[in-house]
Length: 180
Image 1: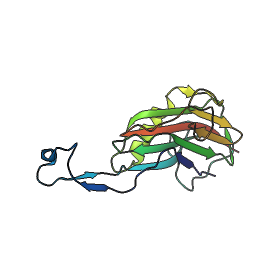
Image 2: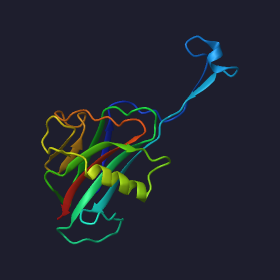
Image 3: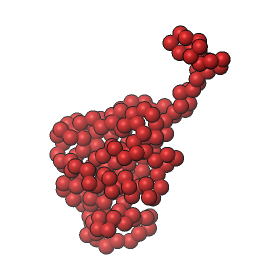
């Protein structure tokens, strides 16, 4: 099963907010219109799979033998100028066995404008898979693995540290599993 659950600690706005008025009581700040728009941010959550050996992207319908090592990339593309605070990601592995010591979390790759295509996803994957390895334990870093579940963030599992998605960046999680 390749499902992913995303939890946000704060409310995400989904529409533009338009107001009429002045900025800090100074009418001249906005010229003649005195109308300003606070744009909603754009974000997307995606899950992709790559062969661990060769870094080849897998597509829906690919058939692989049991024991094949697969890297999973889960990413949140935050195109907005605001961070998304207290992100939680949960991925339950069914039909796969997690490879211990393979959790990587990175939030430094530039956001993809208008969504991420295959080339950009490969860049995100390559950046994240060489980021420092997180411990599998529920402790003082942002990611953990227990039973059949990979989790990121403290709003999902108490003991993990809070994970924020910085503005205009991609928050990426990479881990390895083998096909049962």
